[in-house]
Structures are given as structure tokens and as C-alpha cells.
Length: 305
Image (cartoon, rainbow, N blue to C red):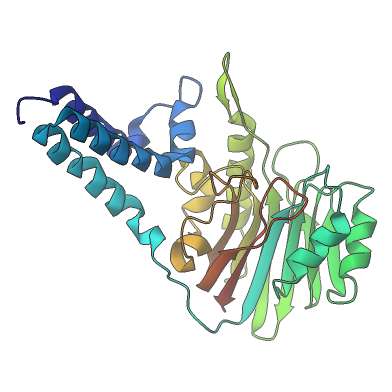
């Protein structure tokens, strides 16, 4: 029992090392490190596979070795499994990449508004769809601003709205001040460039990384203390290439969510690339909304100002 399964034991140790040292996997070749970090939680599926193989091999060595990646995974992601949501809160926000090809923008707007959010951010807006969202949300959200392909709808007054240059040549991010009952909050809405996995080029994320750096610089210059970032960042909190943003903000899902909160693709969510990040405010609850006509799931969060 102890002599068999040495190869499986080695595989278990390698799996644990990949999770521990993921930040050391280089990005020079096809952004391999960022690709790994995008789906990092899924490496945990290797543990039950190794357990089954160890049982088939009747190897005590392999079974004991699987405890190593299990402990590592639990240490890294176990906290996400528990329900950390609480009650109360001053402000509820929601964000949704509505998909430019969405066939039911009106229904999508109603679905996101049903979250009870006081502030809604929408990304991937098209020129034809904007009037539909405006009509659908006008009654509950009298204040709104659209810049390029992103927009924000609010029950509170908006001011100092301006586009944010994320180095794309067209507008996919904005900044606005929301005048809540508890004071002003700076709200950023952003849609970072899409990423692709190609055989000849690997994980094509260079444009997204450049935009993330520019967005991080804009947020770092923000004068208000309470800051909320809503949007499709096309990256996860584990991705080192988003560090310019994630190093200065907290994820509401990580702080007050229940589970991983994967948002894409909507049919079978595998990664949380849609984010609600905060600075200066306390997350109280974070959750995913029901599926709409988009290929992303909308997400929402409640915070204390």
C-alpha cells in the first residue's frame, strides 16, 4: 500500500506547489500566469480525481499525499465557501454587462432593477439599446449618465460625471459622484478589454492589462474617501495583472459573499470577471442575480458608508 502510487503522490505535491506558487508562474510566454490565476479555484477539482485514482491504485501513499493540495486549497479558498453576508447597510449597488447582442434589453433592465439597488451600472451598451434602458429605468432611477458603452442609473442625484481614459481610444469607463443620504460616494463604472485564449498567442490580455493600470491610476487620484468600482474587468481578483486596481480595493464577494460568485459565462459560470470593488466602505452582502439575456450574470452588493 505504501510503495504503490508514488507517481500519484508526486502529482499531488505538484498540484499543491502550483497553487502556492501561482504568482511565480511567468507571464512572459502567452500570459500563462494570468490564465492560471483566472481559473485558479478550479485546480481544487484535481484533489477528488487524485483520491479516486489513489483508491483504484490502493495506495496509502497517494491518499495521504492528496491531503497536501486539499489543505492548500482550503487555506486559499475555503473562506469563500462560507456565507459571510450580514444585514443592514446604507447603499445597494448592482452591475451588469448586458451584452451588445442582448435581445431583451427591457427585460434585462427590469431584472437588474428588481435587485433593489439604488445605483445600477451597465456595460456593453449599444447606441440603439440605450433609449430602451432609459425608458425601462426612468421611473425608478431618475438620474442617469451614459459615456460611450457604459452607463450609471441612480435613485440619488449624480454630479461631476466624466469619462475615464483607460487607454483604448474610445470611452468604456466613467466616474461620477452619487449624493447619498450618508454623504457623497465616488462611483466608477468600467468595462476593460476582452481577453481571448489563442493557440498561437496564448492568453491575449495585454490591452486589458494596460487599461487596468490606467484605471488603477485614476482611482488612486480620487479625492473622495468612499469609492465603489462597478464593472466587467475581464479578470479575477487572483489575476496579478489587475493589481493596480485590486491592491487598493476590496472585493465585496470576498468580504461579504456566499460562495465564489462566478459571473461568466452565464450558462455555466466559471470565473468572476464582473466585480464590485470598494474602498472606504464596508461590504455587508454580495450576491449574484438571476440570468438575463446576456452572457454574463448581473451581480449586486450592499455596503455601509
